[in-house]
Amino acid sequence: SAVISQKPSRDICQRGTSLTIQCQVDSQVTMMFWYRQQPGQSLTLIATANQGSEATYESGFVIDKFPISRPNLTFSTLTVSNMSPEDSSIYLCSVLGLAGFYEQYFGPGTRLTVT
Amino acid sequence: AQSVSQHNHHVILSEAASLELGCNYSYGGTVNLFWYVQYPGQHLQLLLKYFSGDPLVKGIKGFEAEFIKSKFSFNLRKPSVQWSDTAEYFCAVIVHGSGNTGKLIFGQGTTLQVKP
Image (cartoon, rainbow over all chains, first blue to last red; front, side, top):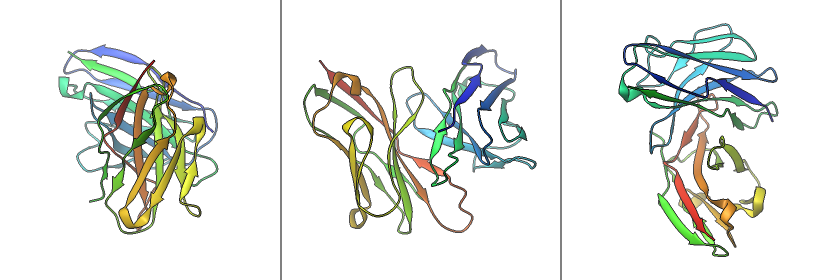
């Protein structure tokens, strides 16, 4: 399994500002994903971070709001732009397991509160 | 659109009670099925998975799940729960088709509270 770290672990931000969340993996992985878990709800996929190309966004999520970078096979960032209180969530990155079989391993998450 | 339903949102059990958490999905094609667990203050962990073969799969910590294709279900079971099983449990599905990229579709989650 992969070991995934995220920074920051939590933050409190003012509306209108932006926050960049970092995801670091201890091994090279082909696929990385970003999820959002809103309070009391399940996980929703925001986008798939592709190395060397633009991220692939799910319906309801756009690049201007959630720009993603994937400069190499072990690192990705997600920026939450022009934040509003509705963006208060836990943001998680995950990676596809090295053995394939579509197993995903999740980072510890970043708890974001927008005031 | 594919969806995953978990029928129990909040379950409270006493220690040693048996557990069954329901999970149904809406997709008629090939699927891979997962249960993830999130203990308080910890990150999501894979509990067990089904890809093919024996529909009864065993996971960590004494959990098991049965894939019943005809019922589109993948219920999670444990014969005797412990206080340490208190956690949030998520059922998830990957559907296979054109353009599949390993996208996980999660259920709403079930909060299990085990009373000592």
